Amino acid sequence: LLKSVYTLSKITDKSEAADDTLALRKHQVAQWTYFKGRGLTTKELQEITGISQATYYRYRKALKQYGLRGLAPDSRRPYHVRK
Image 1 (cartoon, rainbow, N blue to C red):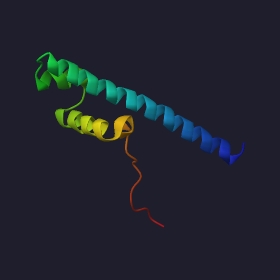
Image 2: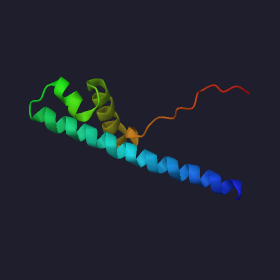
Image 3: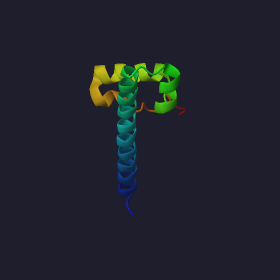
Image 4: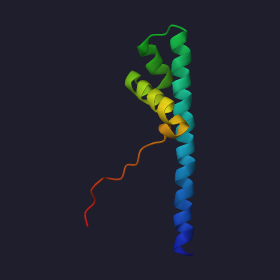
């Protein structure tokens, strides 16, 4: 097959994984907010949602600033790559 077919398949796989990640992070923020309103402690919230308090505040800030795009995972590519 042509190289473009393989490139296209990589792009679609990444976008599907990113959509799942966005939905999970949005759900975790919503869970944390809901249960915090019910009076649960931070330790209990961490066990329920699976994220730390710092991560919750980081996600919440990104959600407020950039909307749903703010929850997208950052690139893991290094800034400097050998030539």
